[in-house]
Image (cartoon, rainbow, N blue to C red):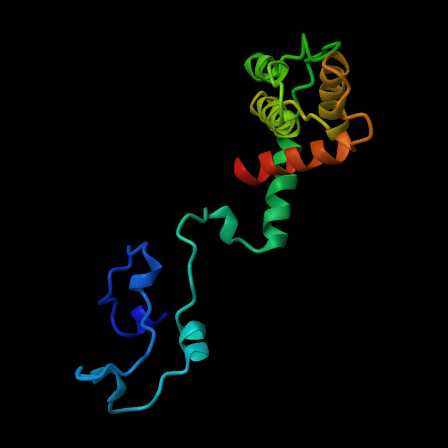
Length: 175
């Protein structure tokens, strides 16, 4: 905000935060020019209100009001109408990324939950790209099938809730 107020004369790309701030002190024998000024003291709250921080990596979608985002997501969901797919489990599901399944099966330490969530996101994304209106229950069922084959790590975890989050992530990041 201060840089904007003074005309962008500081390097906006400075990543080292120690270069962005000055800790006031009076140094003996130094020209303490920073403590002398003409004019009024700046109110940091007013500066921040006047020059709001803008997240540069926000997409157009991110900047929309929540009601419009929800409407766009519902519209996109309504366009998914290709129901010509069928499967009996994760092995023959046309939306499951087989490489991710193999990676999941190789996990020996931590990382089970993260990889399963990646499989959920990938499955939902692949279904969306092919026009199939996959439900959270279907994603959860496919992932539960995989979990049953690999040790049942998710026995008490709410897979449907996780799948809902994965589907929401896909829609929010692919509009």
